[in-house]
Image 1 (cartoon, rainbow, N blue to C red):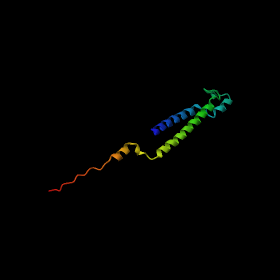
Image 2 (cartoon, rainbow, N blue to C red):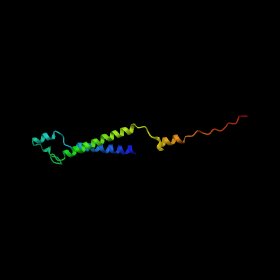
Image 3 (tube, rainbow, N blue to C red):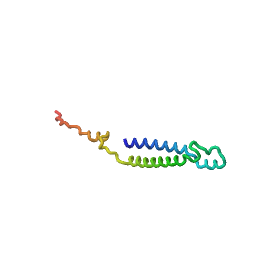
Image 4 (cartoon, rainbow, N blue to C red):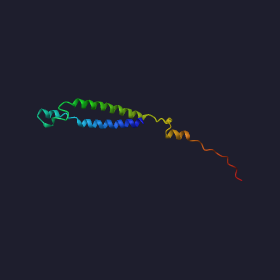
Length: 106
């Protein structure tokens, strides 16, 4: 259950990081603005959302890294079969077959 939840968080964090990186302007866009290039403006204004998008990207990158470490740690732990899973049940329910005494052949 925890592994599934962490995997879902990992997928959403990675997709959000990709979306945020694609929304940000490149470093070369500022050089074109000095010479009057028309592509210098963005939806958020000249400098308005740069810090917000950068901060959101940094937070999501931290979530992604911590979640990656948690998934790696959960993946290397030995399985706990005492919870009654399939392997735990099969190991406790196996009993030796009863043996019946054989009568001597006539």
